[in-house]
Image (cartoon, rainbow over all chains, first blue to last red):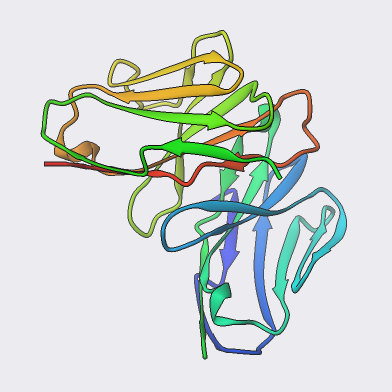
Length: 108
Length: 117
């Protein structure tokens, strides 16, 4: 079993829909990244969180350390949100353990 | 925000050539840089961790003589793919962080797409 599991693997939605991507993990962590990878390959860190909830614009990330679960939400989704979203666990020495990613496509 | 610059973004070269990829942190001291490889539609695979001023730590299965990593300053790490062959064609991406600022997220370069003919 992978240390980190993301769901769904692929998600297609219409513009304006509320999007949720889930990340479950089985190991102890110090924090967790949500990353966005665009078609060109570049990666942007959207959030780094170790507890509770963070919000940035239309993006919201939550984490429940006891349940070993995190979610990324996108409100009022837009075609420019189309990308691969990756959950990455932060373990010792800042090494990241990556989920397989969720490929999100938002249709106009 | 912090920026990591990776260069080149795209390279095509002949088999047997050595290719150097640079990863620079532009506005912070990167004590630690990570090098990743990514195959199409797959997740990132950590190749090695490089700490400024010391030898890189390679992940199991990564040939250190094939993928030479140098991290000589707090703003620059390089990955050299020596005597590249078609099977080395891949997307390579670096990330940088400061081990004294663990509350800050890692910052990624834009990646290098390497094609070996």
